[in-house]
Length: 226
Length: 226
Image (cartoon, rainbow over all chains, first blue to last red; front, side, top):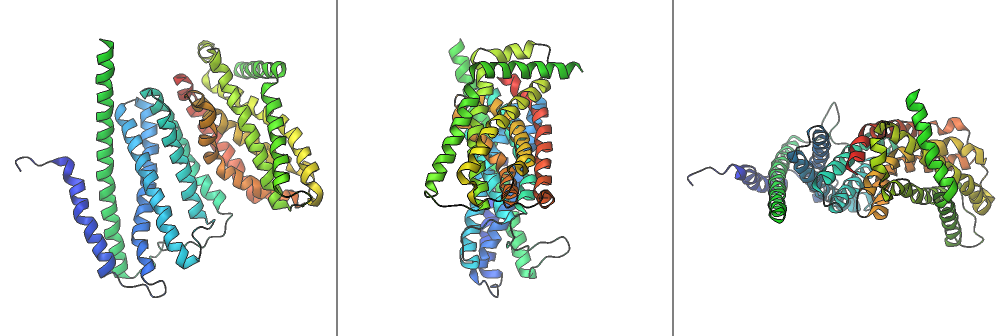
């Protein structure tokens, strides 16, 4: 315990916050009147959706930055956020379906938000497949940067086209009011904070792992040249 | 004026190759008709379909056959190292993008001249709409498909798995355009007037503008990596 390990900051915080968030979901927040305990999945669903969208936003920004200055760090950030984003979107779709089955009586419906998340999942998962198909580092970085930008640009149009479908998705947080009990809102905010901290921790780990991988690759290719 | 002449020259070159070899067009039309026949059989021999199912069938056939032609446009340049020749020629990357998109646009339009009449022959019994009413939808989809497709095919042509990656990368991006096109086509096939289609045609035009701009801006980065 002589030096403070900075890389452990966010994972450590997440390790404290996530159990607190889970505890609050089950023991602090009240039971919803009509949906009962099923509603509790919402405390994970919304933070997951938020962080998934954050990932794709970060991926798009990293893509733009990479194309501007061609630094490896931006490719690492892009790779990390696309990977995390795909995992989180998968979880959003799964938690949403689990909630939808008892409440809507169906796992899936073509609702604007569901459609948008699914299409986003497809776009960024295809970006991961693209990355796995290219060996040259510069080419992989450029191509995935372009895909991440194009994918993010697609989002407004996806939402526009999905408006064709009738929406049955609940809108909890509106521009003017929050349709939540105070204790529920507090729980939700703690869950969001926990998820955001977890996201940052995961993201930093993945970025540094990616950079280490690239450095090992550099060492190996230098070794074969000499 | 100079860039217009250069674009015309590049288009002319690609279309002349196509006219002499006829490799893309013949396979596109042939494959599209094959899909239409297969779907007709899958639908059950002798059964008639309504406008909504018909719209879906038409777009599946057009989408799958167009992807065949799209893959060839770049693969052909790669095979003889022509990308490098294009890059050192005095044309800008943006002009190459416009020329390639125009070639794709015309190839799709020519294939549709075969596919749409055959669609009406096979499925038209209960469709009251005029085939000409499909024209604005076809033009918009061709535009959106060829701009997005040109960018994505330049990406996939730079990888080892061109044929597999092209649809994987392209279709998720095109999903919103397809949703709108199917909806609009269903209305057109049910003999609704053009004014009723505005709700779909406007977002489709937005898609075209967004992807034309994104493609024009991002294409140079992709082309330089090839």
